[in-house]
Amino acid sequence: MLKRQPVSLDQMVDTLKAAAESSRLRILLLLSRGDLTVSDLTHILGQSQPRVSRHLKLLLDAGLIDRYQEGSWAYFHLSDSDRAREFLHGIVTRVDDGQGAVERDMERLQSVKRQRQERAADYFSRNAESWDKIRSLHAPDDKLEAALKEIVGTTPIQAMLDLGTGTGRLLEIFAPIYRRGVGLDLSREMLSVARANLDRAGVQHAQVRLGDLYAPPVEREAFDLITMHQVLHYLDEPGRAIVEAARLLRPSGRLVIVDFAPHDLEFLREEYAHLRLGFSDRQIAGWLEDAGLESIDRRSFASGAEGGLTVKLWAARDPRLLIAEDETNKPSEERETA
Image (cartoon, rainbow, N blue to C red; front, top):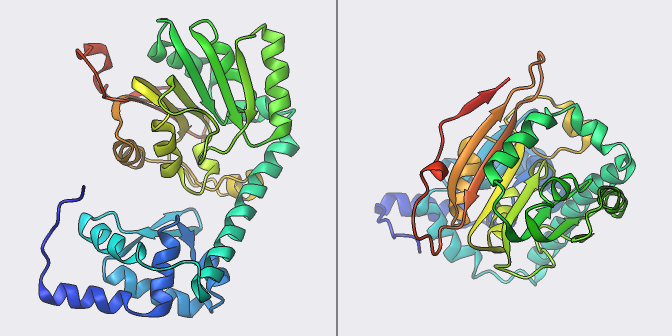
């Protein structure tokens, strides 16, 4: 529960003025459903770019929203401050989103999100057969896999879940330690590749299935290990996906995330459907904390090539029912691997 923070009369008046306009309130409602660009908002609201930008500036000045840059795109989201979140929660939860202009906004928002998902799904479909080759251009897989095995260890576990399983590679390398493995992906073509790879490796105790990371079709609190390998940069709401993943962990279960550090390679968005150009340690740490998880490890893997990408690995665990702290699982210092 958020701790209430008192504000001055003038601050409250300014905040109320910023929110008390129909278009700005509609923007707040939309941003409560996820981060959006100016282009997204102009399409949804049916207003000009200058008008939408003016509304956004007023909301920014009032501290109700924040802005962050990714390459040539600017995303907007509700403020992370406790004061603003408490205020906004009290507003957006009381607005009926099933009537009038708000209902149309929500329909267009779903259209924007579908277009994003279709773009990513189309990319996966077109590149299913060559995905391993494409991924090898982005990351030193041998070093990364060695680090993953070191962090996860060899202690047997009951169940593993691989979210955005792709070619099924993680299900394959961790097959010796789990009794039951499940992989989820949105691409039927990619699932076909994963099934073929698992069959080829003789892995018979894992299954892959069609599934949405925002609503995984699996039981909650059922997995000892959950992995998300090069998945978050395709999602419009990565924080939400992490929260959903955390709900699937058993007490003391671990979540391992692999993705890119922040970069400015805009062509990855244009040609490869990346919605996010990497993530900072602070972003991931914030999302893990929001999900109720405890960070236990963080590593970096530089490409070694000029202008190359740095791959990041973050590990966290569910802190429930922990009996003793293992010194090896305490947060480690950043380690750079060439």
